[in-house]
Image (cartoon, rainbow, N blue to C red; front, side, top):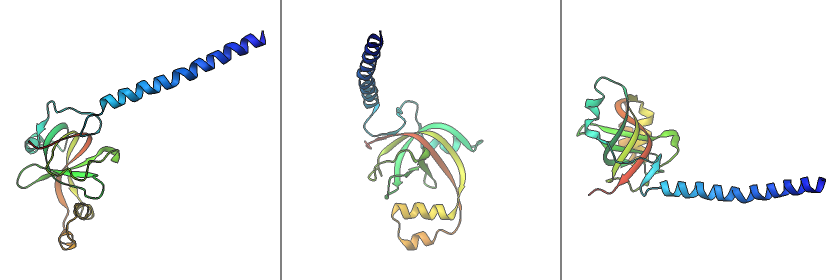
Length: 167
């Protein structure tokens, strides 16, 4: 009787061990299928993306807005790809960071079209952070030292980014 119970337990263990890799392989395949070239963070699509030029109008009466935007990258972090700027208009840019610093974009992203999904905000960026961004962008020390005042800016925390070549 003991031998039969041990045999059943052993067969159950062997069957369970044989199942786990298959489940892991299926999960890995599903994850690989979700990967899209130029996609970072959560998988997003280009559907219903609003041009970044419309952001000021959309945020006229609010300080925070969940939204999907699209726009051209005019600058990005040259150290690690941890932020990017999208041009709103001739006066303002949208500073985009990535949720929980969970992902980064390639260093050669300037000039690409970005689709971003997350939260837009209006906030005051302190001098220290402005100088940090300028340093990340590779600006000369003389230009960085000219930053002496905090700045009201449009910012964005992206949960997902999709980059496309400019056509």
